[in-house]
Structures are given as C-alpha cells and as structure tokens.
Length: 78
Image (cartoon, rainbow, N blue to C red; front, side, top):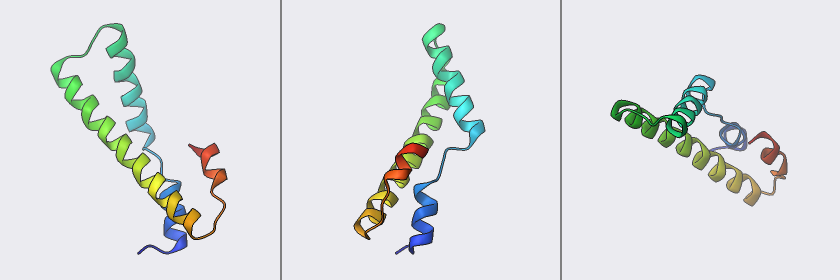
C-alpha cells in the first residue's frame, strides 16, 4: 500500500536516540546489578519498541527488494 518513497523512509527508520540510550542503560544495569520491577517493565516496553522498529524496517526492505531495488545499503545503516 505504500509507495516507494514511504517504503524507503520506513526501511531507514531508527529507534529515537533517547529510547536507544535508555534501553542500553537498562541493559547494562541488568547485567551489573539487576533491575527493579519498575525498570524491568520499562525495559520490556522499550525492547518491544525496538523490535517493532526492526520489524517495520525488515518488512519495508523486503517489499523494496521485491520491487527490484538494491537494499544492500540498508544493512550498513542498521
């Protein structure tokens, strides 16, 4: 349903930097000392957001490839 421009945009979507930073902080804290229950919930929500972004990227890239585009450059941006 999306045109090529929208698919390229979706394929290049990234997790907002503040979310990525917070997810990394929680990951490192989990390894060092463990997380509180509240932090575990937050980490779960942020991980879900990350997974959703990656799913959208993958689906958009697959559609672009089906449409004949070279998507190999998207791997470098991941």
